[in-house]
Image 1 (cartoon, rainbow, N blue to C red):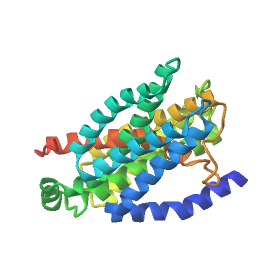
Image 2 (image 1 turned 60 degrees about the vertical axis):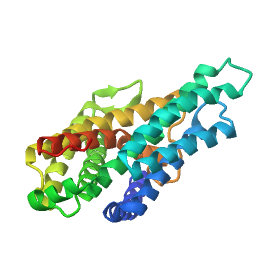
Image 3 (image 1 turned 90 degrees about the vertical axis):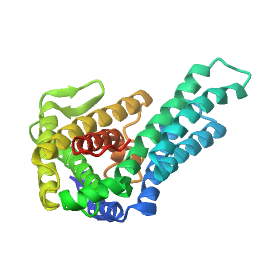
Image 4 (image 1 turned 30 degrees about the vertical axis):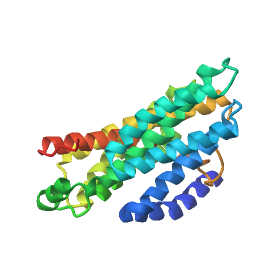
Length: 289
């Protein structure tokens, strides 16, 4: 009960601030995503059971930051930087005379590059679709949206949070069948179904709040895909923590644990949501690439 109160108090303060940042977009949203990336990376460095040198930590933080900044400028910069940093990550291993841990270190570089950089950069791409003139024209004339980027970010984050809420509350009340006991013993099939339902309802309601800019069948698709991505994102982070022998990635958020504990689902959700949005606009006659 005490932990639940902490979760609610943290949510009461943090959620309005998050949605204000979503609405403002631009530099404010960039700072939010950079903060999530940097703090999550630092938490990972601290709980991962391996020695990570200061040089490697600095390199990882730098390339993740540059990937997100690249996405902020243009999707093409994200693609260019991703290719460039993969090559640099390989070359980076040449600085040592001891190659006994070469594969482990290279895997660490590439994992961090993709997980804390490339995947989170899709949050920027999704929010910044409002910078696309064709989408702005279509959303204004057809969808009745002045700020499509804010709508899609609000939609997928709401679905993700409700998926977590539904999974937590339903799982605690009636959860019996374990979903993945060796990865996350607390997750149940019943809770997962509850999360699906909460996410689908959240998608439809969010769509209605914005005066239904997308058909409800598309809103339901978002709710479904977001829920699936959120579950896998959460399980993936649980597997990492289980391997490291820790319960929480940190303690910065009372009742929630660390930054990575709170945003692990969204790291998987943002790329999925962005590409669904690309497909949605493709069927509407607009190509983002």
